Image (cartoon, rainbow, N blue to C red):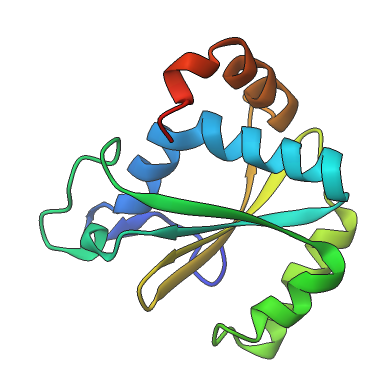
Amino acid sequence: MYPHRSFRQNGRRAWQADFLQANRLILGHWAWQGFLAQGRGAVICHVDPAVNQEDPPDPRLVRFNLQFVETHRFAVRLQDYDFPPAVVAELLSDLTTYAPAETLILLLVADTQIEAALIRGSLTPPVCYQQVCEHWSEFSCL
């Protein structure tokens, strides 16, 4: 996680961890679909700023928009956010070296709160893509 390595705020689990857990399949699907169509890149997820409230809504009900940005446009898009130069350099390095079949790069944006993450796990982007495609009727309202 850039610049924070933990999804904890004030001693309690932060909304990001719950959001990622609730939406992992669709995020992984979007990453793999983008990779297949455009090559290496990152998913930018704009989340309803209501998640930053003291008592945030259920992460399964939070509205969000997804965009896949390929590598050559990602550096330009990072200028929209105020990451320190060292973080930008680290993100760009990760973008050129990550394994798309195992990892997704995510920018999670909720109003002025912006987090970047490399997400790995047993639910790889290809697995997410396959599961969403097999159960598309459950996701078609997204």
